[in-house]
Length: 341
Image (cartoon, rainbow, N blue to C red; front, side, top):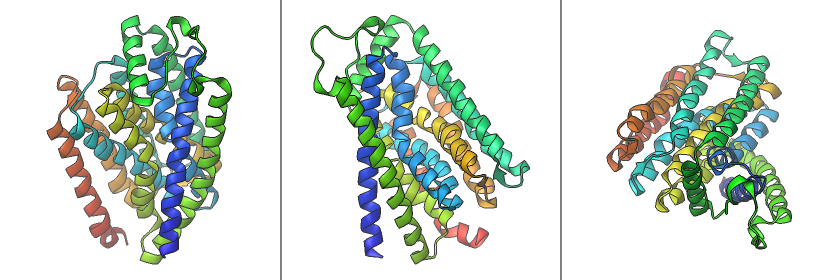
């Protein structure tokens, strides 16, 4: 059993390092291509930090372990809002200023409703629905890019400053022009390519061993694959979002912190669950439909009133989110085996 825990921790380190490399490389490359910093902050960063979830869910789907695949997506979304945003707000109260974050919040809430369709489709997300979800993600990316192009100069400048402060990635000048001086190592094309390819390789290898060890641990404790996916796998693959958001909060970049979570949640549903369903229809159990999906929806809906309160998430509200996750975790570990076992 100890060897499986060591493999799990080692694979998690590899996953986190791979996501970090992928985010930095992709962000720098996108900015050098002239993409808006606002677009990078809300999509490339958010999606990049979700790459461990994608790797883990695809690996689990290919192995036929659909409980881990679905549980990872749902559990990660719950963890993102309740734990990561909660902890971020406790570290530093979040005050939002970029309107695109609020726009994408509505898209996130619409996205998390989609898996409920499984209740009417034989308790599964079929391949055709997965394909529609992926198309929805493409449409979201296009709309986010267009919104970034329409953003005012002041909003773009603020997003660029926050991105540089939170990730250390330099944004080029207005219009996408690169600085006249020779760019630092982290912004050179070849180095961006090394980061992206190395990050992808680390994600693929790390995901394989992460899922493999998680399954063995679950069997050793007699815990279902679904619960392992909702807890260990979901929390583990969400570490990049946790680190990115807390660093962004400490460096007073709240829009990047919240945009990271919202972008990740959209990608988790439309991208990860969609891609996994295209590979193989995803089975959605009664427990997920009755408990986990409603909790995920409630967590996302809770952000509505929080963001309307002056666009601020206070330390008290952050602590409430953390406490709510503790209650959910207790129900999951103590009562769920009795109700659904």
